[in-house]
Image 1 (cartoon, rainbow, N blue to C red):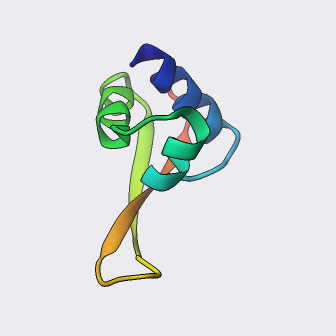
Image 2: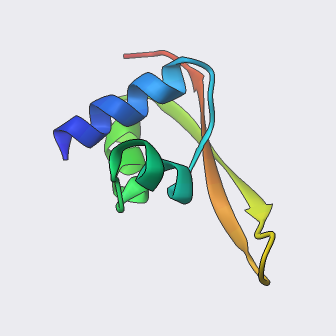
Length: 70
């Protein structure tokens, strides 16, 4: 899981956002919300944007790093 945390954090630090589907493609991370939770507990200011799903009803989360604090 630590490797996922590093990969996700590096992606977000580049000013990019990340959804669950993108995390699976990027680093085979199927528990993105858990990784985001751990990063938040480490002091990173990560916000969640809910955006509509394109193929069916509902929304999904997209995460964005607001500032580097740790």
